[in-house]
Image (cartoon, rainbow, N blue to C red; front, side):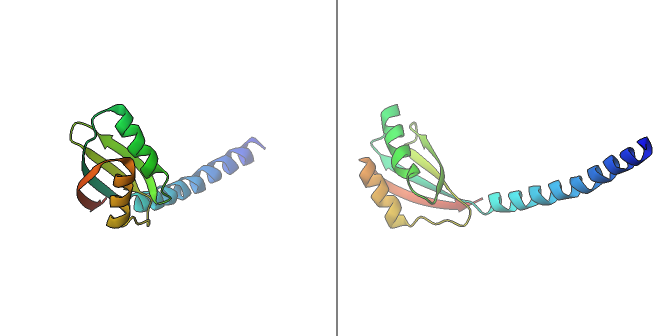
Length: 109
């Protein structure tokens, strides 16, 4: 009986490992398809500025993460895989946040 339990446990572990690897590969593919939008703005100088920008951009369905770099006056927006955010929308969001848009750059991870 102990031998049967051991055989079942070994079989379960052997089949679980490839499934986890396949899931990890799918996650890696999704992450690599993400787009980062880097926005250069004028006027951001404090934590309150960062919170306001984060709140405005964070309400967008396409946005996964927002990081504000006050030292360089930049907003780094990570979009959800497959999502899009037009330059016009980004410009409107910057304006709604109360800042002046300088430049928009995009990169795909």
